Image (cartoon, rainbow, N blue to C red; front, side, top):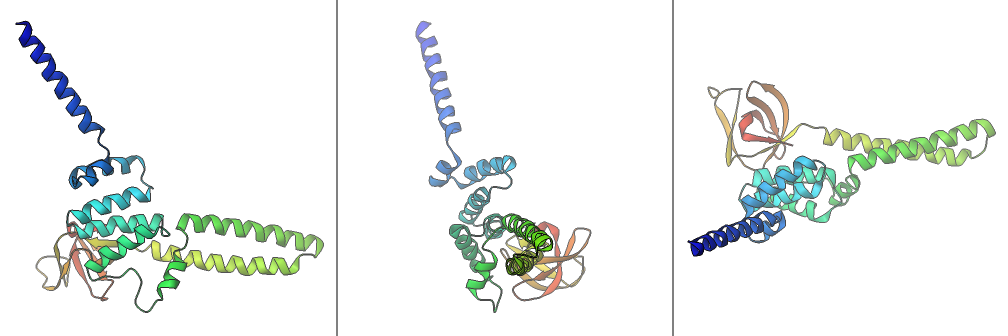
Length: 240
């Protein structure tokens, strides 16, 4: 009887230690061991507490990419890119996932160096820079009005203010576009908002679309890479 009790206690202890070891595995450990679905679940729990962490979105994108869900990988890489556009790993993986879908991060005809310059700061950082330059210009303008001195510096600050304001306007316009990614393996692009309308094209996952209208469960979209316009079911899209 005593032996059985000892065996039972040892079994419970072994089970407790095993469960504790599994619970102690970090998302990074799970990812390194190829347990992408479990790592994804862990990262998605973390993102609820840290919704503005670009590296969590990056890691989620990595999990989806490894699992073959290119569309969801693109969506999460894009979210990470918007929060931290300077990070080379985030940019590289986003470009890689978009290229797998026949897309490009840099618009056609735009030099890559110019695109990197435009996205040299996040929108939040750019907004902070705009406020800083605005305050500097106001102080210099006030000084010039009172003393009639520092006129050239005030003029330079005014030009800098206009440049930063234009930069911010361009970035805000681009980032406020209602974008989505085709998340299902294939999605039908139809001529109207319903299955009774004929399909004009079949779009594979990972393509970026701009939302222009909505009717019920249907979204009117423009395919960014080709400029084709049509309607898709909302369930086929992952909004960014």
